[in-house]
Image 1: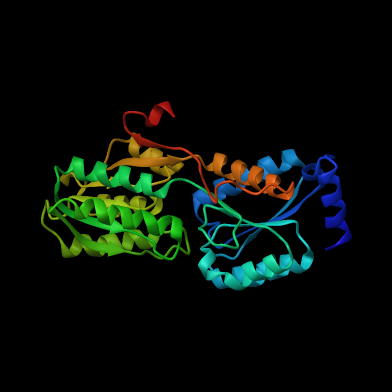
Image 2: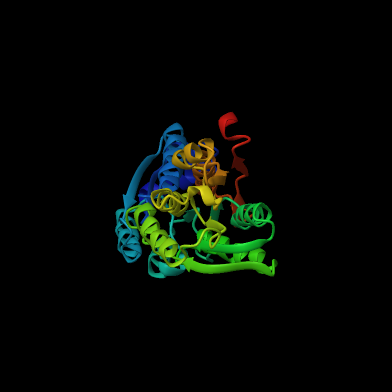
Amino acid sequence: MTLHKLLIGVAAAAGLGGVASAQDVAVITPYLAQPGTQFYVDGFKARADELGWTVNVIDTAGDVAAVISRMEDVVTQGVDAIVINVDPAQIGAGLSAASAAGIPVVGMDAGNDPLVAANVTSNGYAMAAETSVYVANRIGGKGRVVMFTFDPFPPVQIRGVIADAVFGNFPDIEVIDRITPDVSDGGIADSRAQMEAILAANPDPGSISAVWAAWDQPALGALQAIEAAGRQGEGIVITGIDANPQARDAIAAGGNFEASVAQDFQGIGSTTADTVARILKGEKPVQQVIYVPTKLITAANVNAE
């Protein structure tokens, strides 16, 4: 243990505000190109500023493997805590390095792992159920659905699992394609290209009833493809998850993009910071997964937000 960490521990034990005397915290993610991740990080940094922390945000720009080496770097630098926004199962060596150094790791919309002290996120099960049931109800329990998913990232992967289960409960709903788009540029461009191909393969009006997307970027790409093909009048229902500003604008416009779920990005970020603070004071989280509430956004309430 470094003298710096020892002094922090003594201050915390004496009730002298151990959290305020710290902290150097690293936030590491490959997904900073995603608007949701940007908002999480902003929320975290705002709360960290209030706590007097120094925050180093590291973006590996889509390179998940690089997260491990960056974690090893900050462990060597002696940070007080590490926050991750990535699948813990893919960065085991980095988690082990942090654990060996006694540095706590907290997930910010990440996933669960014995070496992750806590994961602060939205309830992906509930969000996916809400939007997939919305789709099923809007198309009257029958029709052909395109799904955009992303299995490499646990918080998004579980959304696809739940949507599959909901659609599978309707015998007259057929999932005609399940797409994992390239997210290196955020996901809109590749989702549009993939949706253009699906539209070309299904040219008849009514051949596609809905697009369910596990987050907003693919939903926006699909919307662009549908509008560019002149097929917006066919009643193709689109839903996303995140309710980012572009999605809200699309929902407010009253077109095909009908619903999304608003995550409290700022709340996730600030709650993550507070969770780190409690851990650095020596508290053990009661829950390994901490859910921050969400809200379904449709044309009925988008302008009230």
